[in-house]
Amino acid sequence: MPLNVYQPLFIIFTGYNKYFTLKFTDFGFDERLMEGIDASGYEDATPVQEQVIPLIMAGKDVIASAQTGTGKTAAFLLPLINKIITDTHEDHTNNALVIVPTRELAIQIAQHMEGLSYFTSVSSIAVYGGGDGNAFVQEKKALSHGADVVICTPGKMMAHIKMGYVKLSGLKYLILDEADRMLDMGFYDDIMFIIDHLPKKRQNLLFSATMPFKIREMARKILHHPEEVNISISKPNEKISQWAFIVYDTQKIPLVKYLLGKTEFKSVLIFCSSKLNVKQLTRDLKRAKFLADEIHSDLEQDKREEVLMRFKSGRLPILVATDILSRGIDIDNIDLVINYDVPHDGEDYVHRIGRTARAEADGTAYTFVSVKEQRKFLGIEKLLGKPVPKAQVPAELGETPLYNTASSNNHPGNKKFKKPRRFYNKSKK
Ligand code: AMP
Image (tube, rainbow, N blue to C red; front, side, top):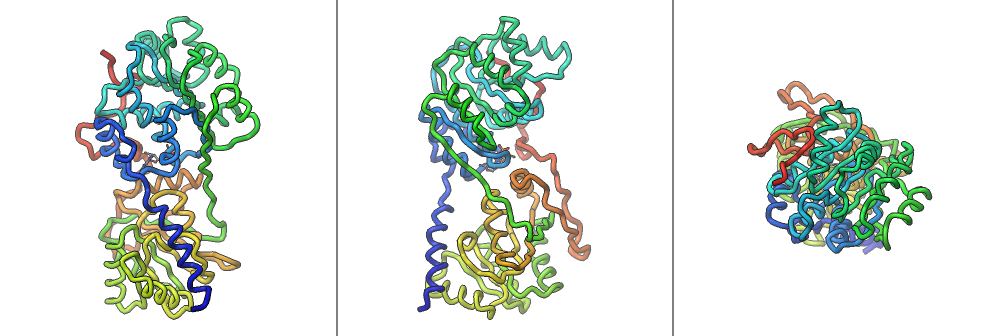
């Protein structure tokens, strides 16, 4: 057997381990927190969550480079909520302080917090600038009474601390989120002022998209023997023309057929998130007389090698695959990648579409986004730093859903879910 047949298969199997991702049940979270996770629709942990959650649960200080869109907020909120539920701590004190650069981020984290802690009694408050006198009074009341988690912007928190009523003696956790942005915005002195008022013995977590020298310097002053986690994501190749189709699930198969029938592609790789979808789509394509075949872990290795060889040689123009093919495999002439299902996270998206536009060639990547996948795709777009252009679904396939860019961390499917309030998430008894 020539080497080039074995080589990609070896890479497939090493890459395959990645898909045994951790489930949230693996972290040993309290049941009430698990309910919030389920209601938020999270199933598998993202890479940053896999790495950061066990460290926080073990009481370590952590410095993590992770961008928005990686799931970093839940990576610190989940263990924090769990600790507050299960640890003994002083009542009526502010237990955890999350310092963030902007009021938008403070509000977003407070909403995230409310969704995840919905079935617990953990209380939280967002403290940020720009509010009226009424807001200040409400914040003052909450801070003097004590909320479990305080999410604040530096300037506003400093102003409250200076007034002397903020209880900080029982504080156990400090989180600095988007630390690089806070330094760029000139918050260094405000942050250090706040930290000077905190108990020395506490757990510290620092998240930053980038790790310039000044962040490391600040971390050296604030963190104690931190564990370092680095989740950097590559950007997709500029030569890939990316499009997303916002569809209903039932429109996915007709859309694949439409796209393959309309334009002649020499080599097409279609990714599905489950073996079931791979099998169903391949069956339908074959019935419609497309030259398609499938590859997934149910097939014997000989069969996989044979299918892959036909695809690489150009004799098989359409290959439908699970994620086992998303990494490492080196095929230069793929001109179209279709994400039949939205990939698990941003890193997988970049790897999947990176199968096209290799070497000097250009390539196209289509992603089909069903209603229930919209939130996941929005997270991927955040990570990429820009939206993926939306392509028009042909009228003959019928009406399509709207892309709800406002979909957030709320779980609208949950009938019990209340709209987040502005300041106080839960009244503390
Ligand atoms: P963040 O990086 O914290 O801004 O999160 C980006 C998006 O990913 C948010 O909309 C989160 O609700 C969502 N998210 C976070 N963790 C998960 C997960 N494990 N599974 C699915 N979505 C998640």
